[in-house]
Length: 275
Image (cartoon, rainbow, N blue to C red; front, top):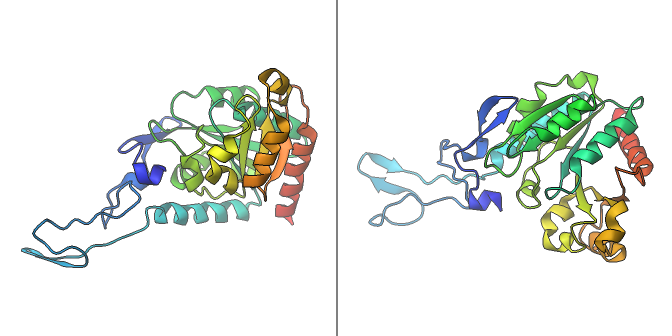
């Protein structure tokens, strides 16, 4: 996954036009690398493992978890959100499965009940953020460049530009990717994974870490299921097999089918956090 392959190495994320370095690709003390293992910096003539003698003194091999910094910042985010009694969703999916449309219609459906704000992550363009702003939703854009996921520091920097005290629900629309975002805790309450009827029934089996990590699974574009030859029973069976602990919803944001149950779920989750 991303923490092993080092994708996005050296690129910075842009939040509303400013640039921030990607925290997991910095060379901090201990020389962290964007790979799934710590590197032995000893030379061929030196003994492997443990401290090694060097002309200028002694070199000590320091191994640190690549995710340590992210997890620490995620907990900081979580404490900030909980203090404000926010319900925070991390919405993940493959590209084109309908995240932005679902968020847009969710905000409209919750109008008068809950106030919703959004952080949007994309490799390039602010098209999704522009669509949400047109719907009157407060939104902050994170343009990640070559980085294929959001992380806790990006989210922390982005939410500083939102009035969190004026919100009840914060939605983080993650980068369209079913692999790398599964590794990164952002400080959310619920991870919501989307599966559209146009993608095929076997996505949960192909990307089990993401689907297994989700608290809720939303089957989207149900109005297109028949035209796409979507096998509903097989898809639900696969979801229940991999995401067996997740609450499953079937919706069409375009027609409104199934949206009432989804909106009621969010309202209940928000009320639980207030109490």
